[in-house]
Amino acid sequence: MDCDIFAADSFILVFVNMCCFSVADYRSSYGSGAVILDDCNFHESVHLDNFDVDRTLTLVPPDGEFPVMNYRMTQEFKPPFLINSLIEEAGAFKAEVIIKVSAVFPSSITANTIAIQMPLPKYTTRATFELVAGAIGQAADFKETNKRIEWVIKKIVGGSEHTLRAKLTFSQELHGNLTKESGPVSMTFTIPMYNASKLQVKYLQIAKKSSTYNPYRWVRYVTQANSYVARL
Image (cartoon, rainbow, N blue to C red):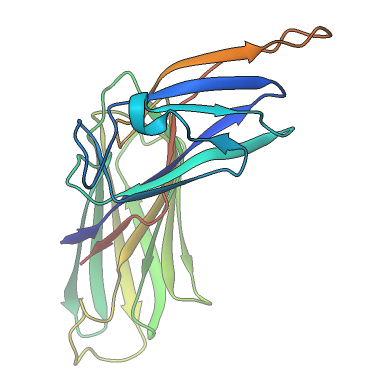
């Protein structure tokens, strides 16, 4: 199995005041530090006067939610999920699929809204599914229109494994390479309070407070899948 993964994240703030925050553990491809970023860009309201000195950003943000900083990194890092998938012939007109998802983040963290898809050979006519006994909050379906498996899991606790088995029926006898006609397996998910890139906000400070209300200051880390694909 080959897995194509990269980290692409954003810092998001919801403020209507002048504020500044410091990014910890940052370095560009030519700098020094703990996290290597291939590239990054900032919202137009961000002032970068002190960024090269102490990684501090200063801004007067517009109303609502917006990305302060977008960045991308391709250095090696530990992905939150491992996906193992297999498809094997089970007769002239049949095949079996096994998809296993392993959560490699801490057990104190829970991922939610997980959706896994796997394209099947175009001559697939039927699929029946088998989930592990006691599986809760899971559902699998065969989408006949676009010939794919869709497996939805409500939540996954760190350190756990989940397996889906599917039996496929074909309209014609198998002659080609079944693996080349299937996949890749793709996955979408959201993991609150988890940061795959390890880039952190060191502090967040409101430099100019409003006289009419007190803003709520907070930092939230959320990891969402952008391109999470595993080849058979």
